[in-house]
Length: 537
Image 1 (cartoon, rainbow, N blue to C red):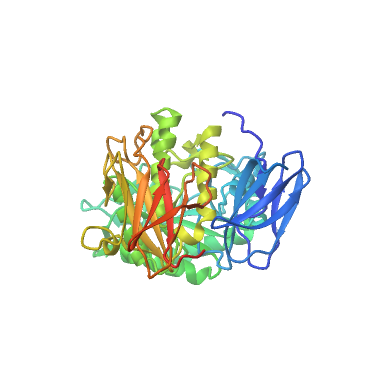
Image 2 (tube, rainbow, N blue to C red):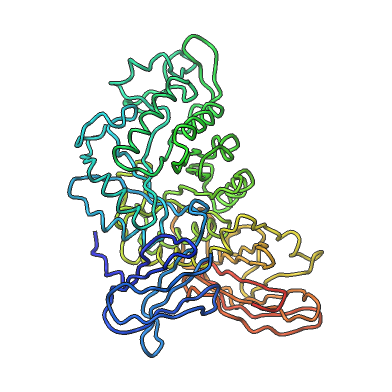
């Protein structure tokens, strides 16, 4: 793995409560100052004499950008912080997939702080799928990985100190060969009478069976007591949808999965729980179940940016206010140059972030998920980690605009010839209502009293596959935004781009009769435009 450069600026936590002291760790030499911005406006500064922790004091709820500047005002590093009294109201998810006795836990915690990960999945930490704690203090997992429970404890404690929840992986219906004789009476059966299985090492049982639920909940509670986990990632494999049962009859797995989630919540009322809806099954039955996120692992036919957008829209409609997380593994890093794969990830993040969802991708001390077996993760190059930091900083700094539960797509009520109320045009590329190769995908989202226009630049792209190598975006030219004024007020227009500065900056607005007109800088991958028709910040 390439050596990673020093991270010059880190928040001490992935999130802060209102009233708490917000602290930034400075790891670079030389005097400077920290500049704090909220939605583009400077709201505070603090001197940074050199390496050490700098207090920003207590901040109101919201997302903030924090820049380290030299004495002459030159920015040299940046980060972001989120202040919230709803610790599970957002989910920026990461992963860990190795637990050797000498594991560098501090490096894992650094990545969580760098990317503001508020939850980390501990993948395949347990002894067996149906016997989580039966291996003693050290053992090998079912596929031979060395595991030390002391490492799991150190991870849970280190992440907790940074405000990040450690969620233990737990398969909700997989039973290994050693435990199978005790559970064969709960088998899920195929049409030929054989039990459903995963490969040759797990057989599947009905997750709705009361005795299985009692066993699993007991195992999960024991794990919390033994290693300090803060919750669980409840996994399934996406099949079967219906299955036969031993003794006759059939079961609808969507009902069984929901019953399992409810049983785990009853047994662990304070745990953070996340259930895996594989390829959107069965999101309709579990989105409002008593868990803490709507999490969907995607596979074909969800292969395009448009399919990701539709998936998130359905999840947000059914989620009962919970955050939406998409596990979109960027296999492209295995087959394409890093620069092309980075652009692929950028378009994936732009689609998800602009629709109010996040992506499970990064973890360990700087690795990427490129395979559903997380142990096969791939070390990220420094340029990729820098990209992820820019975009995750952008996500956190603009949390109120991007992740607001009440955000609503109002494109159909504002754009187009009939509405004639707001739109953006480009000289060298068409503006499109959906993700279309060669165009700039435009959406208008209402967030409170603000209009947020998302512009994803697909100029120069031959297709819209989210896991394929991407070309450098073509320049569509400057954008012209035209919006109907609200009375005599002159609207305020601000623009931000995660790859070009990151902060919201004002754009000059000219009046043209009843309209206000602003010329926007050309977008790179994703540009966010905030329009305040009231004419004030």
